[in-house]
Image 1 (cartoon, helix red, strand yellow):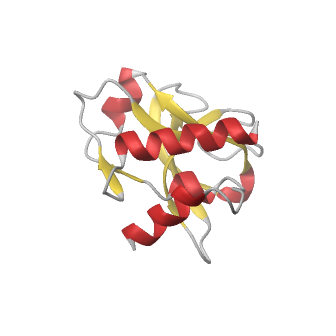
Image 2 (cartoon, rainbow, N blue to C red):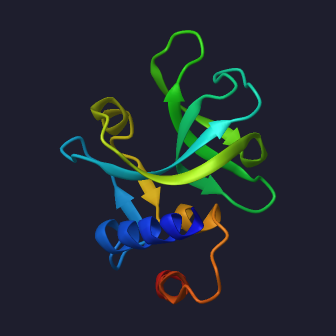
Length: 135
């Protein structure tokens, strides 16, 4: 399973973030790379077990991520902020849903989110080189 994640992350970084740290979203895109996760603990806006897509993170003391997902009662897509500790089952994913792409119009996806949620082995050199290049 870990090897699949590494191959997917490498493919995403090469295809979407080549030479850049951020990817701007516009509604003409067919798909966008995001980190998918499931919510472990219900929040005011999202229910337990729900699929959320992470597009940016606040690392350090805050440890929160910006997400897009369906509201727990109204079932429309909303942007929100969730604590990282209340999310699980992180996986890289290409999202093809036009509604998600429209909702994220004007936002920027941080390429660093793909490295932040996965334990990558030391011999996976490309990501280390990528981090050095964008700093």
